[in-house]
Length: 237
Image (tube, rainbow, N blue to C red):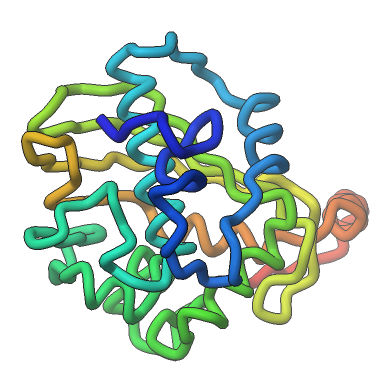
């Protein structure tokens, strides 16, 4: 698995001499203190250090960190530099260069829906705008945990949970302060050095994005009261 050396408690390849030439998207390594606290406060599983589950979780967190925050493909150390592809929900596999060019968020949220039906349109977003959108929506970060590991290397299959609190606006929608989360399954094919060669993600994209549109708690309470009094309430996406 990815080495713990040169990372924070849960991620590798974030600090240290090995990263002195890394080009970071925001000029410096990201600070994960807030999202680590969210993770520790609300995770549902706590894996023993050195266990297969803990190693897979570290690899996942490292892979995600590098995908979002490292500008150059060659700075990514959790993936195979020559043989790498990623796909989401069975769509066309993307090379590492393609993923880095469009950005991790846009690659992960790829869709075949017509543009007029997209709550979030990855084809209309740049790497920078996508990153800003989600960092703004989740000021405390978007935590991720591994729930189960079904098989170990070289074909690692696992279930994960991704969550955060919408405490900032999202594409013109005001923050509602509630938890936004989704569950999914991932398969990492890894080489002999446990570097990811192929990543396949499966999750419900539509429900995840629709959760950004939920009314704030005060508005929901008002709607419930109005409904109880017989007033028709129409809720749309």
